[in-house]
Structures are given as C-alpha cells and as structure tokens.
Length: 266
Length: 281
Image (cartoon, rainbow over all chains, first blue to last red):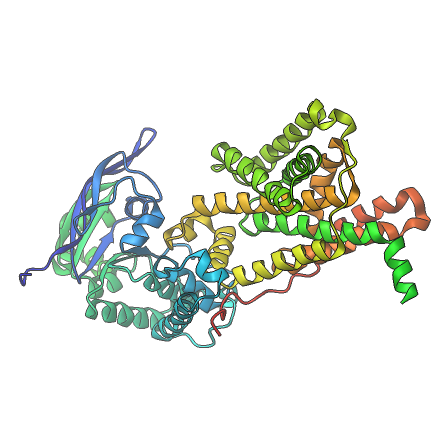
C-alpha cells in the first residue's frame, strides 16, 4: 500500500436512454476512498438516475461502474450491497410497520451469515449472530441520535426517519454510501446535525457520494463536486471552484451572472 | 368424560376441518406475508391430496412417506410454475395463480386413473386429531421462530417495499421462490391430511371457491402474525355450523363477516404485531 488514496467508486461514460430521452449522457467521475463527493445540478439533471444506475435499480445503456476494482454492471441491487454499496432514498423508504431496531437489522441482513439449519436447530451460531445484530442496530441508532428504539418507524417525524435510513444503510457495513438528498425536509438545526454525522463518517474512512439541493450544505460538506445539467457533466472541482464557475451559475440561474446569482450559490 | 367423547364423535369432521383449514390459512399466510397474492392454494392442496392418496391406495405406501410426497410434489410443481410467475406481482400474480388452480382441477377431472370427476374413494383413514393438530402446531411454531430471524424480517421488508429491501441486500427473487414453494408444501400437507381423514376426495372440492375461502381466513385474521390467519380459519369454519338454524343463508353470513371486517378492520381482527427481534434472548 502506498500513501496515495485509492478510488472507491468510479463511473465511466455512464449513459442511459429512456426512449428518445438521454437522461444520463456519458457521465464520468471518480470518488477517492474516504472522501465526500457531491453530485449537484438543477431539477431533472439526472442525479437520482445516476444513483439508481450505481445502486442497480436501473441498467445503463452504456458505460461502466466500478466499486474499487470490481465492475458492477449486470449485478442486482442486493449483490451490490453485498459488495459494499449502500444507499438512502430521496423519498423516505423506511419499513413503516417495523420498529427502528428491526429496520436497522434489515440493513444488517447481508452481513448475517447463518443458514436455515442454524435457525431450526437453534444453534449457537444463529443466536450469537442475532444478538450481535441487535447490539449493532442499537449502537447505530444511538450514533444517528435516536432514542426509544422499539417505536414504529412510521410514527417518526420526517427528519428522524431520515436518521433511521442512514442507520439502516450503515448497518450493511458499506465501503461507499450513497445519500440521495439527505437534508431535504430538515430544519436548520437538523441539517447541522446531519452535517456533523456525515463528517464523522468521513473520519472513519467511509466514502460518501451525496446528491443535495441545499447549496450551503453541499459546499460545506464536500471535498469535490460534480455538476450535472441535462444528463451531462458540466463541471467538476472543489467547492470554491464550483461556486465561481460561470457555467454552473448559468445552469442554475440562466444567463444573469450577477451578484444575486453568486449569492444564491452560497 | 362421556360428554366429551360424544362431542368429539359428533363433531369429529368439524374438528378435523378446523385443523386442516388452519394449515391452509398458514399456507396462504406465507405468500401474503411476502406481498404475494396467491389464489392457487386450492390447486396445491389438490396435488397434495391426490398424490398422497394415490400412493396410499395404489402402492400401499408407508403413511408418513405418502404424506411427505404430498408436500414434496406440490412444492416441486410450485417451483416449476415459478419460472413464469416469479416476475409477476399483485393482481397479475393473483390472476395467474387462479389459472394454475383451475389447470390442476381440470387435470384431475380428466385423470381417469384417479377416478376422473368421481374422485378417489376408500382412502385409508390414517389421519388423526393428534396428527392434524400436531402438524398445525409445528408449522405455526416454525413460523413464529422464522419471523424472529433474518429470514422473517427479509420477507416482511419485501412486503413493504421490495426495491428498498433489494438495496438492503435482500435477494428478493430467491425469497419469492422460497415463499411459493413453502406455501405449496403446506397446502399439500393439508391436502394429504384431508384425504386421509375423509376417505374420499374429488376434483370439485378443490375449485375456485376453496381458494377464495382460504384467502378469506387470512383476510379475517390479518397477516401481522401467523396466528391471525389460523384464528380466522377457526372462526370461518365453525361459523356455518353455529348458524345451522338459518339454513341456506349461513354462507352469506361468512361473506358478510368479510365485508364488515374489510370496512372496519382492514388489517384483520387478530392483527397483533409481533417482535421480529430477540430470538437470541
């Protein structure tokens, strides 16, 4: 091992067409291990589509996706999770009728290795893996700042459900975590707490790819940012470069590159 | 004691029917708990009943073996039909499984070596109260154990949101297959037991009405826990007997019960949520 950071996630010439519409057009970027990478762009730019392509919910028309040096094309979403990819959703998708602990334990699923035989014979292996998963679920829920873990996920506020999703995604022990608009619908203090949480994830060398509309949030959080517009990559760089990039400002605000536009980008 | 003996004698067939319907309710529960609406349970039951009865009648097979084959053959058939149905869900799966159930029924109507439309009679009465309720208890107990493992949680997650479950690492096509196979095996067991307590089986017993009755057990009881559908089966099996005085209208009462439950208690009457953790404690 050298000191140079390795690439955790890379996307090469990713393209997807829905009929006549090219939703994602030859998008490429690389996310170094342990960094937080932002994916931004106006509505309809193809950010969530890129997420769905990476997590395996839709198949690309062309292009390649690599997790470290493993090619992900053609693998089902559950196989990608097994390899170390986890995600949250823009519209919250917690399991509403299940408790918080149960939700997070679903996230543990791919790491719980026991057979039906171990269950039927009530073997020690089954019992120890289950009790470890419960412990892990509780500690992840505490990590994201949630108490009273026996509540139903459906009874929680929007912001707290986002935390459950984050804990659930972390439970699968991902190498790369995809966060789809994690700050949407959060109030300023919740957003601040989320920012702290994601920074702590970076401190433990987790790689994060984040889609977000809150520009202040993304500028403060990310190491690098890729900007999409109409499915194409229009810019990439560190937050300060992106803020000053006239192409980005134009994409967001049309032609008026005045002070007001710069102010809106933070 | 004498009263009990009389009671057991008079109501023997009802007592058997309650246990067998309990198993059928569990068979449809298995598929519903994964969000798969199957109306083919009557067909799987018919395959179980016929295969075990034919083994007993024609080959004088050892009874536990006949019963085991009565589970295995419908399970294999379910695995076979899952090749085209695995991609279906919701109403499409329901329609396809209705078709499968009818296919099985018509197959037995025309199977001359199994008595055709007249069915099979003289099946040895090897089933018993203890066997039926023993099977019911074991299946029920197994499902509670299952519910508290990663498998039970995965199935529950699939029912709520298959896409999200997939991104959590749950191989949902494999679970769909497993659910269909297990549910067919349990329906087959109910069929095998039924054949060996009633001494007669015919294709008319396993029509669409039975498939709907089985589904109604789960609708009444709810699918939040495995006991719900069993209690639903007990209520809907006993109700027509209790209502004998109103003669031909008694089945209408079953229908009315379902309608009322769906309006006022859509989750089912016995819908207690069970914990899906803590198996290790």
